[in-house]
Length: 125
Image (cartoon, rainbow, N blue to C red):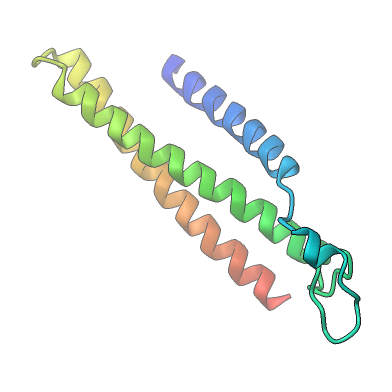
């Protein structure tokens, strides 16, 4: 139960950091794009002709969070593998490393499925 609390705490911290990171992302623009006229189908940041609406923004935020979670899951799989190889046959360490790998794989699968579901739902509505 204590390990579950640690995993949930780490997940919530990760989601919080991912949310902060997503809020600080800025659309890249150069000075040439910004100061061009809006006529002629220009898609500069100032003209905002890309059609960013709430649906697109929410989709991008969720996808960014899921990508970050996927990367964290892969990193945890690597950490679990390192813990497994350095356990020196200690049964407690081996079990802990295997649990880390198992939970990371489950988290990766959930992140991939969530990514697919979000894109499917947003694409339909």
